[in-house]
Length: 218
Length: 237
Image (cartoon, rainbow over all chains, first blue to last red; front, side, top):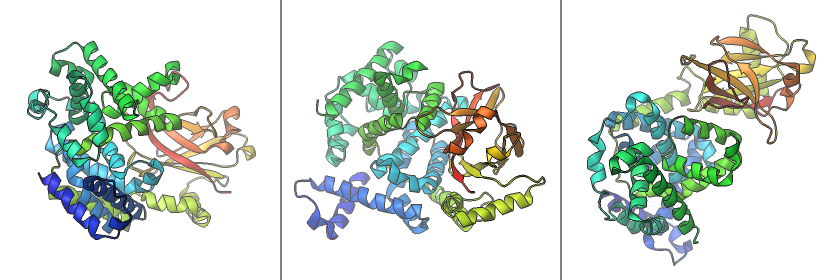
């Protein structure tokens, strides 16, 4: 996978630096790589806040494929995803100074900007999804196979999240993942899963509650 | 809606906002609520930390090169001041440099077709892209017999959708609710008369926000629609 090779490259460069000596030994290597990436992105964002265009180019280089993947999956149209991505990066440049106040992981902060913009985009009435463009993407999730979850565990960036998702009931997990990755609304979920709206809403709500409990160690 | 105070409902709405199943008007309303409710914003941030790392499982797809070309052109244009609109950095710089403020004031007053008392406070309101959209300023209220504020549209005026009104809100210090100042017209330069009770509170304002409301203004006395411009107030005299 491209994703994996990109990560291992990051890991090596992280290790070559001075950080390898100060990093706690109990962290798995991929976790250490994720932390190194987060540190790097936070540093780039702070330089973007000072209007350093070189830092902004590096930031784009490191994150664009990830964020474009997120946008494309939700919007299902390349031209829309490109436009949203473009807007979001200009936004990130303009608001880089706000990042420090957000107190979240840099990639989470950037991903939230893209996801929120995509969901706003879908609010426009003329962008209503026409039907089965997303079925192909969704096919992989239809059965109980962990699929993308496995890559999460492998990346161990979000191992706890993946473990907690796997503990949900199948329907709860499916509806949460369809909503998250494909941007499906409650009614789209209901028609896609061929279930009454109320049932799907309950799956989502209970799933989120259990997820929160599991992540807090309850 | 009183139920927005219910902690369980707040948590559930925040979760569904982050997951993306909160849609349409409910999403817009929830988004604008976050501007006035830092604790709600915190609950949202917690859910972002919980759920958003899931995006790490999405496949990475390199965007076409034209995206970066367009982004870097827009960013470089703003940095070099080629953009016709004034960059955010410019305004940020102003916000911390008192001397610079005198300059920009002189500029505004110089361009102004009518004489007016010196301004005491100014709020530069940015749009969601961080670009200045409007400048609201006002003289010391005590000095005025007819208290008013001046509103200038910096950007090319975005169109007001049919059946909507734009309502300007003053954000008082502390946790006090936003105070409606009135409805904005489409003029690029306008003054808005204030009620005496509102005028006395203007000195304490820390921010201004503009929301999209049903025609005639918010029916509840509080912002109900999305906030499209906002900015902090800065004392200049």
